[in-house]
Amino acid sequence: MKIIAIDSSGLVASVAIVQDEEVIAEYNVQYKKTHSQTLLPMLDELKRMVDLDLQTVDAIAIASGPGSFTGLRIGSATAKGLGLALEIPIIEIPTLDGLACNLYGSDKVVCPIMDARRNQVYTGLYSYIEDGQSDEQEQRFHYTLVPILSQCAVPIEEIAEKCNEQQKEIIFLGDGVPVFAEQLKNLMKVPYSFAPAHLNKQRAGAVGALAEKYYREGKTVTAAEHQPEYLRISQAERERAEREAGKR
Image (cartoon, rainbow, N blue to C red; front, side):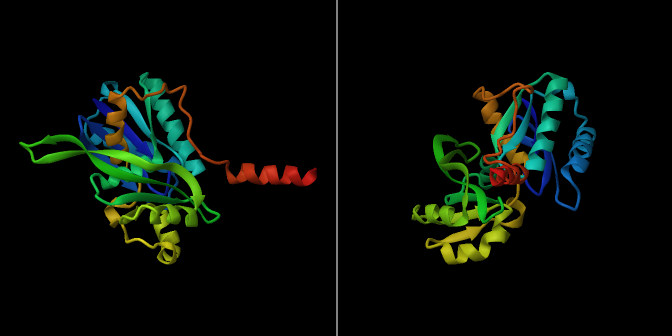
């Protein structure tokens, strides 16, 4: 199984090639350029570096939202274009699930937070449980990601309250951490920590790893069917609605 994975839902532009439970190439950039400038050149570079024959790709995985409205549209358009051209399916990975996969096997409650503006975050709560399988020869255990709270858009105070209800240490990650770290210091009542720098942002490798599981379970859509999941309306749509309401 060979999957091209894309995540442009946040500040990081990330592309990866995942094959048979192995990330064979990954390219991440977070530097002063829009995703429209970076995604396709990054993918082209990966393709060249690993001699990828696009005709051997089984599916395109995409972080389907929530996240930056512009970033999601760029990633979605890229995934749809590839899917249509190659006639292969799209695997839609919820953005927060993909972020939580960065901390595979953690014994803490994982809480990804993305800055959604207006003192809100895109967030969710996740835990890992052993799925009863282990590879004794390799001394490797298998874990399953379990949502405690599915991804949503809520005020930072609300997710902090949900975290405090867990009565277990929380580990935060995502671009919302530097934005809300000071508020969390005052809101949190249970022990908490922040993920290290190499694990705290979106990574296409994590999206691709989760996509392999989705693919085996038949959780795919056609390229024509795929649409980003915004969770809430854009600022432009909200402002237009407010202007129209003011005219009545």
